[in-house]
Amino acid sequence: MKKNNYIAVLLLMGLCFILFPNRAHAADNLGYTVSAVPSSKQIDFEQSYFYLQTTPGEEQQLKVKVKSTQKEPVKIKIYPTDAYTGEKGTIEYTEDSKLLDETLKEPVSSLVKVETPTITVENFEEKEVTIQLTPPKESYSGVKMGVLVFELDDSGEKKSMVKNKFSFRLGLVISETGDDYRDSKSLNLLEAKSTLRRGKKMVLATLQNPEPKVLSDLEIQAEVKEKESNKIIKKETVKGYKMSPNSRFDFEMDWGTATIKGGTYVLNMTVTNGYNDWKFEKEFRITNEQARDMNDKSGFKIITPTWIKVATTMLILSTGVIVILLLVRRKKLEEQWKIKKKKRKRKKRKKKEGK
Image 1: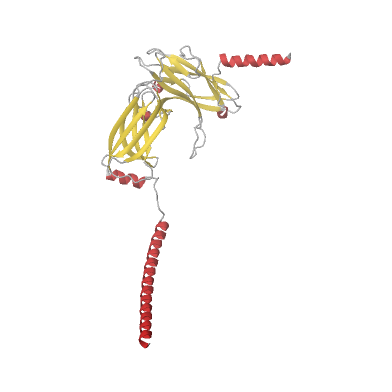
Image 2 (image 1 turned 90 degrees about the vertical axis):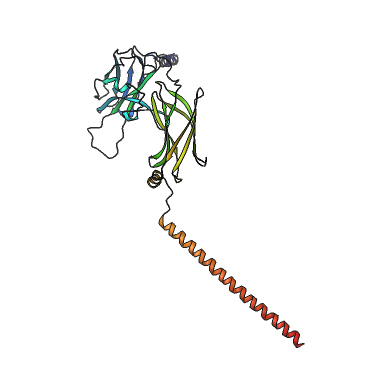
């Protein structure tokens, strides 16, 4: 009988997990958990992040529960950030407005106000955070993407050379229509250039998604060649890239350890996502001064130590001397052999004359 009760309880728990998915996001290693309180404006209740429908100029209040998972107090800083496209074709989030594209108007961070930007939770207590969302007064298409960051606030601790930022991010996507936002159909190549990045010589192709929708499943094939000789210098193929709405990023092609020469180059790119295809071609020039500067400053180049250069020179000189000595010795031996041969011939002649 008890066994049957246990089975019934387990089945009931499983049914609860299916019907009421857990919206709490564990961050036990941080000392707290974060969970979104469902909003009446939620478009998709299956999502654990905020995916909200907005009306122009109509304010909304969002609620988030923050719960302590330890006795010790945890100080948490709360702030919004905006979506952008990272260097490796991933959707990332940032506070740095310089990383945002000019086509992104009124980003999420400009529409959100956290009533209590810093809170402290301790001894397993739970607090509710209120976030004010004020959508644009004018209608917008597509979506605006960002996250609410709940970050451990270490401002009161002693400063160190290296700091690890621990945080939890709660997604925030807003839309007026709730239509599919993963079907952007536009892509632009803004610029091609060569420069140093992270100490590496790079060719950078700046790609832009000008639509307020996500551009997904990109496969990029790119090649760089010398314009004059048509010689292919570098090829690169990647798959699975995606771009956040109204964003740009620099597609990187590592030049490697080869020496860069000044001249005019041509970048050819083919980009596809199974539904759309884009072909780009763009020229860019590297001056002799730029090439020399990149070659000198690159941290990734073949550097031969001085002792190897000296040893190699000595080895070459030694080899040359040995070869010369061998040739001289061979010449002497040949001369000696010729002299001996002449002497033998004279002896033979004398013997014949004596007979």
